[in-house]
Image (tube, rainbow, N blue to C red; front, side):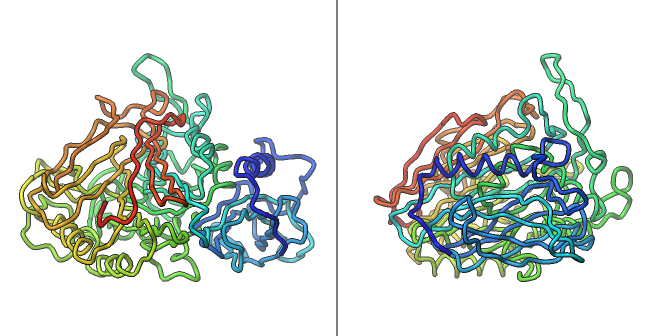
Length: 527
């Protein structure tokens, strides 16, 4: 495999986007007729790459029928002297999805790939190729790192509205030319049906694409698969997937709003009496593993969503799972809490990984915020969904686990920690400082919030003073469930300079407008 010097970032995008835009459209939405091959497997749902490292990456595809997945890589989009990777046989057991691991890739270079789907009975019969591209992580610090993050897609009944450009925020994220996209959860709203029309406050109508799977809440495995498939109807998302690899985590709406292990619901529609959330979570996790390239899931993984992604000497990303191992939602005011929101095993894993990291920056991807109060009231009881419960005093409930982690970071002198989250459907920046806090055994740090991508926007959450947050910036509506057509859709950008090591966070609107910027200096405990 030959390689030329890394081309300009913008030039690569122009070439790869032209190719992927032509080849990655579902049937009937503009597939290039010159490449059509009747009766052969098709990849109408585009391609995705994920969990990219300095020398490897995962590539995903979905076929329209049984097929053998084959991936070819090259240094240029002409695919001269390609390298071939034979992937899995795609069939009904995985909803015709599959992931192939690419290995032995050069670090810090643009990788062009194309996916071929071959007839299982005749490998010479292949469908039209679908192309994508990504950059491997740099082995040398001077190259720098840029990525974007957000969460919350197709929530509160707001679906793909082609009259406003569909999931238009993905085009704005693509224009920043990121090395990867960190999705902080709520990739689907399995509990949120989507109707064809919804009235807006100004008297206009929001119009969504609809499917059978999105006409009701998800219960069966096929229901969950249909929810993940729905988002791939959007052209902007398919274009984005073809050029930006993902690091994907989940939160609650992949299963049901505010769910926790062991929860039992029902007694009336839409969920049957005695519905066990563990059963729904099992179906969702399987569909999640089928529809995203995640290194710890699938045949080669160990079944975890939490994991560490090393992105060269500048950055490690610690992807948390604040859903699978948590205790039940409650008033969260207990004075001992061995389970917390992470579970003991995940907490000890995170401590070990942070202590072992030699990266300049350590991004902790928490799918729920730390100091923002997220209620989950049940029959008038003040239950809470995230970490904070509104009591500004000493740590209680799930705060005890976070206090233990913050104390560990301080006493082990772990530098460069930054927390990124979504979940609350507005954007903000909080600085936590022991001088303002009831709990004081930690070093100052920042938590940045973004989202939603395409969901209802909500007013800013209240703050809990236990860890001394100061909300330096916020943009949120004053009323609940503002539609994507009315704005208030957000993403964040992180840019790490290879020369200085400085990390700059920009909070952006759906069109890319910068709302807030903060530059952090490397080498400090906490931040």
